[in-house]
Amino acid sequence: MGKVTGFLEYDRQEQKYQLAADRVRHFREFTLPLDEHDLKKQAARCMDCGIPFCHGPTGCPVHNQIPDWNDLVFQSDWEEAIRNLHSTNNFPEFTGRICPAPCEEACTLNLENQPVAIKTIEQAIADRAWNMGWVKPEPAETRTGKRVAVVGSGPAGLAAAQQLARVGHDVHVFEREPKAGGLLRYGIPDFKMEKRHIDRRVKQMEAEGVVFHYNQNIGVNRTVEELTAEFDAVLFAGGAEDPRNPQLPGQDMDGVHYAMPYLVQSNRRVGAEPMPGNGELPILASGKNVVVIGGGDTASDCVGTAFRQGALSVTQLDIRQRPPEREDKLTVWPYWPTKMRTSSSQAEGAEREFQAATLRLEGKKGKVTGVVCARVDAKRQPVEGTEFVLPADLVFMAIGFAGSVRKGLLEQSGVAMDKRGNVTANEDDYRTSHEKIYAAGDMRRGQSLVVWAIREGRQAARSIDETLMGSSVLPR
Image 1: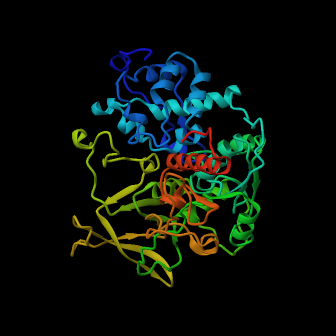
Image 2 (image 1 turned 90 degrees about the horizontal axis):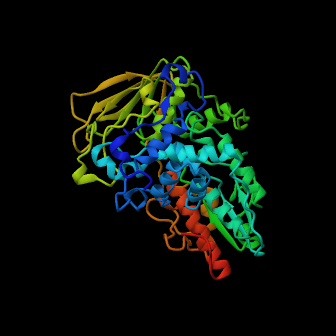
Image 3 (image 1 turned 45 degrees about the vertical axis):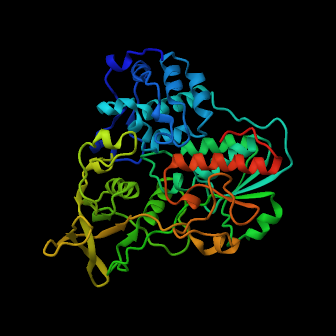
């Protein structure tokens, strides 16, 4: 490494946030990046640890070569750093913003609770590369004559499409929505990642030969059979969108919604996109007491969005026990630990209730007025006599997903599904039970992280290329 004693000389430093009182007034990103001097210090903290767990299977699903580009940043060779980063990750500006950074949990320095600020450095490399004009289209020198359809333009679909186009295939991406990005655009709020990052990647991919077809709901306004007849291979990368139904008494009342319709509406509004003309009423938190059921990232996004819309109060219900402030390193490291985490949205003023089960929703004249809860025991069963009621004008259910939506695409294709509601395909070749159809990302593995989606898209692209051409130069 460039400075083997750096971890002894410099303390961990991350990029800062705008004050909560300021950032809730807008939907823009609110991180305050480190300057180059401080970034070099943070890169210098990457120690010569011998076994870099940060880019092993426990740390980084795409196997970013983290010690290498940390050293390059320390040496001020930023252009080589982005080349190294792009060799494993098509979209580091995405992951540098929204990945929860399992690499930092796996860092050797995390044994002392002072991991290298990997995520901060990754974002800085990607942002500098765009600002300096180093990110350019990389069209294939020769064309293969093979045609590939990618259904879905989330991170898995985008990664696969870019890889396939760069080895010379004619790639067409079919997207149900008016713009590309999938959950990156319509699920993740702008305050976590502004959509200009997606737009410029789409422009790059179009210059590389990728053709995007919007408002194309395969299985509804175009058949799967048409795709398999027209293309040499078809990749399903549509995500896992079927919300888990808690079957709560009263959940059909006005003011009770699944999380994703709320987030999609908000993102369309922020992006100045027209709302679909299906009679869907606006969902707004302004002036309301909001309760979010669920303790994950989607629930947290609802919290931050509600605050920006002017909610009176936001309470988040988590059925899990309150986790410890710090994990037992000797029993958990280098794996992802269960410990107390506070998202930037939760830090904006949310009340958090742990060990809280939702029993039912109550209301008047068909409109929700409260959430009836109870404390739970170690088996997550309600404890008698612990009931309490939270006033609520708006309730969001964010308790995960039950797999992919079967109606349309999946039913029509006839591909085999597993018990969890995901498309059956292995991690060796990503092939489904249909000889021409492959599957990657959340549609195959269930709801997961953006970094897993990018990995699966890249690996599926290699499998498709290998099948079509007999061999492949694409990395796995």
